[in-house]
Amino acid sequence: MREPTVRKQNIHNNHLKTRLIIFGTLAILLVVCSFFSEYLCPYDPYVQDLGNAKAAPSLAHLFGTDRYGRDMLSRVIAGSRTSIYSTLLLVGFITVFGTITGIVCAWNGGRLDSVLMRISDMFLAFPGLVFALAVAAVLGGGVQNAIIALAAISWPKYARVARSQTLAQKETVYIRAARLSGCSSAKLIIKHILPNIFGPVLVTAMLDIGTMMMELAGLSFLGLGAKPPTPEWGSMMSDTRNLLTTHPWVTLAPGFAIFVSVIIFNLLGDTVRDWLDPRNAR
Image (cartoon, rainbow, N blue to C red; front, side, top):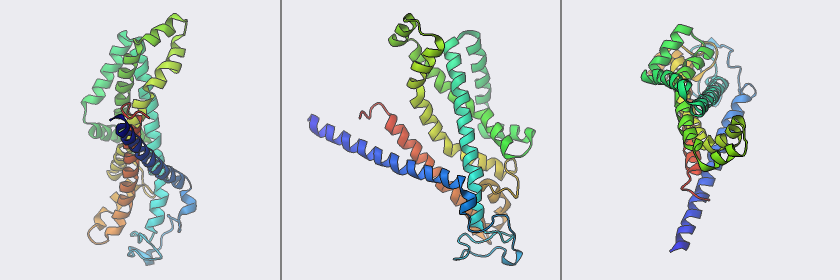
């Protein structure tokens, strides 16, 4: 009975490994291509050609052109740097800040823990995107302010995850033994706590990339993110939404880019979550 179970587990692990390689490769390709986007654009994404405005998709312009005659494929490629790197910067910041906050709260406890957790409760009490809209409106438009607005509402989730995981590890036997051996708090956190809470935090961050990308695009769509003529997928959809019924390719091109990117990062996040699941012993 054990041999079929082991064989089934091996097949499942091989399937997970294949998925991880495929989606990880696609995500890396997205990031690398967005970094070199200015070299991959077939046309200058800022050059206007009013004589060729709102041209339908063709071999010359695979995604057509917008109302100013700018090549939509070039605009989408150029916008990938703003959209993808802004998302990765946002997720990286809230992951680091939230994790540090959660560890500090769990490790020290007392009044500091109570104050910071009540602050996180205050942020979590508001509907996320509505609160982000309010913060972004107060700060004004721009990609930086959109990132700040979303960071303000997103860090408590990571703080909660890190805090709960740290509390679970804090009273374990090996932590007590390390304390008795003379390890300092900093060494205990870096050497023992962080490696043991890294998995849940990483999974949360990976699954959050797609969500943050859509929320950044949403703020830009509402005029609170990137400003024209800077190519950014959300603002590009906003600028061309009135052409959806007459020239749909102008709006659907950046929407398709968002769809593909979110799907890739979400599938990668799901695969990482399954891969790190302790029930999938390898």
